[in-house]
Image 1: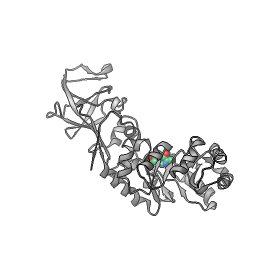
Image 2: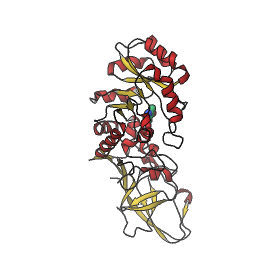
Image 3: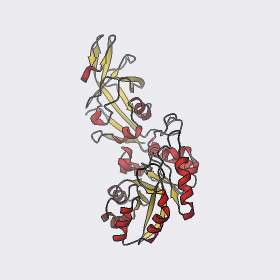
Image 4: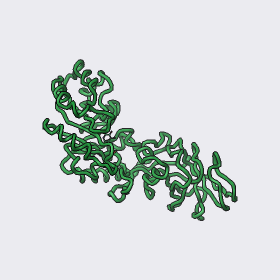
Amino acid sequence: MRPIQARISAGAMTHNLRVAKSHAGAARVFAVIKANAYGHGLSRARRALAAADGFAVLTLEEAAKLRLMGVEQPILMLEGIFGADEIARCAEFDLWPVLHHVAQLDWWRRHPPARPVRVFLKFDSGMHRLGFPLADHAAIVARAKNLNNIAGITLMTHFAEADEAAGVDWQLQPFLRELAGHGLPWSSANSAALLRYPSTLGDWVRPGLMLYGASPFAEVSAEQLGLRPAMTLRSEIISVQTLQPGEGVGYGQLFRAERAMRLGVVACGYADGYPRHAPTGTPVLVNGRVSRTLGRVSMDMLCVDLSGCADAGIGSPVVLWGEGLPVDAVAVASGTSSYELLCALAARVPVEEVA
Ligand SMILES: *Cc1c(COP(=O)(O)O)cnc(C)c1O
C-alpha cells in the first residue's frame, strides 16, 4: 500500500476543546466543524468534540447529517438558508440558521416553518461579506420579530482582523453600541478573538481552527497556546537519488545541486493536499529530524534533502505536518494558511484515527 496516511487524534481535538472552554468562561461554545471539520472528518470531529455546547456547519446537508448521527446539541448553519425550501427542513431537524440578507427574511415571510426555529441575525460590522448593515438594525430586528415561528433571536457578527494587529475593537464597539438596546444574546468570537479578546465572548463563541491544534496568530505558536495538533500527515521515502553538482530535480528542474547530495522521494504530492506552491526549503521531518523540500511538488511525490540525514533511506518516515512539525510552519513557508492546508487533505489519503 502507498505509505501516505493522515493520523487524526481524537484526544487532541478533545484537549483543544477544553482549552477553548477555558477561555470561553460562561459563554457557550459552538465547535465549528464546517468543511468536513477542517479536513478532520465530520463524524470523527463530532465524537471527539462531543462536549461542545453546539456545532456550527455551513450547509443544511451537513447539519442534517449531524442530527442523523444523533447530535442533540444546537446546530448553527453559518450561512443560513440558501433557498426558501430549506426553512421547513430547519424546523424538521431543529437547526438554527443564520439570517444575513433581506432575501432570507422574505423567504421566511412567505414560507414560515411549521414550528418555532431560533435564528441568528448576522450584522456586518466591517467585514463587508455577509450581514445586514449595522445602521439598519432597528428595522431588521423588528422585521425578524414580526416573522412567524421565530423561536428567538441571537445577534451575530464576524471579525476580519481578530488575528492581526488591528484587532476587534473597531468592529466590536460599534456592534455592541448599536445593538445593546435590543437586550438580545450575541455571538462574535472566532478562535483568534476567543484566545485574545475576552470582550468578544458574549453568549456563544465559535472557535474552529484552534480545535484542530493550529494557531490563528502568525507570532504565537499553537504550542504556546497550549494546543495539540489533531492531524499528522505522514508518509515514507520511496526512492533515494544522488545528485551531482549542477544536476536538477523534478519538473522545471527548479532545484539544482551545488555539490553532490542525496535526496529522498516522498510518497506525497499535491493530489494528496500538499501545496504545489510550497517552494524549496519548506520544512519537513525525515526520521524525526527537520529537513527541507527540494524543487517542485508533483502530483504524487515530492523531494526532500537527505544531506543531514545519513541514516535515512527507503521506508524512512516523513512527517509533512502535525506531530513534531506545526502545520503553521508549513503554511508560512508555502505562503498559505493552516486553514487551507488542513481543509485540502485529499479524500484519497487514508485516515487512521488515533487516541
Ligand atoms: C469559520 C467560521 C468561524 C471559525 O473561525 P476560526 O478562525 O476557524 O476559529 C467562526 N465564525 C464564522 C462565521 C465562520 O465562518
